[in-house]
Length: 92
Image (cartoon, one colour):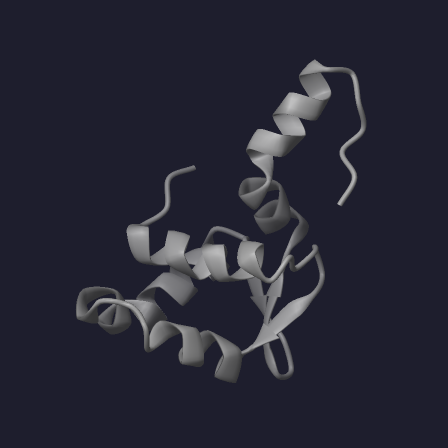
């Protein structure tokens, strides 16, 4: 599934922080990172969050947004595919 460039930036935050499935980032952490983005991406921040929720990559949590299993696999699909092709199990 294809996601917008702003949604990719949001997912990059989860990747850079090495967030696993069912772990979350607080809204404060996401907004702090958002401030370093170009204005266009800052303006699309909330739309991109909704896009990721609608696609099943993120869920709303009590204090932020939770990376789902589907979101985790989307973030790590290249690593998962390489391991699968080599007959190895992917380790976090």
